Amino acid sequence: MLAANTIKCRVSHTYKASPAVVYDAWLNPEIARRFLFATNDGHVIRADIDPRVGGRFFIVDRRPTGDAFHQGVFLELKRPRHMAFSFTVEEHDHNCDRVEIDIEPLGSGSRLTLTHTMCAEWAEHEEKTRQGWAHVVESLGKELEQQQFKATG
Image (cartoon, rainbow, N blue to C red; front, side, top):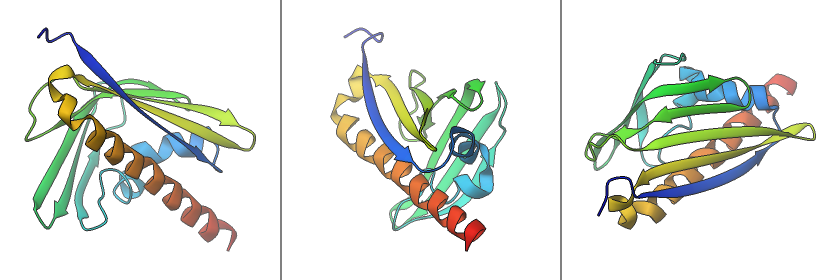
């Protein structure tokens, strides 16, 4: 099997927030720690984000099964519509994963589409990966709604 074979895993979510607000949440460590790779039974204990092209992110979610490490490098940052980053988790140390986030205006809100391109050798993890990203984008929606409520409440 050629290493060039890839799988594209996509998830989308609609938010009541503007593209800029959605975009900025991904790059703000205080906000990102509440939705990015955070599981229902875990707790993010570290969220380091250097929001520039070539900058790295490192997020650690402490889970009952042990700490989960998520890291990558920002490849493209075009606020507020697009970002791309390399992505690895420690136990799967390979370099061909790329995640792209596209955010389009939708009325007074926005629609985010996340595309995770992964090596075909990880095909058995495709559905789990999709579910993981779906959880991330849904959690971001809850986080943005709470922030909006705090701002208006």
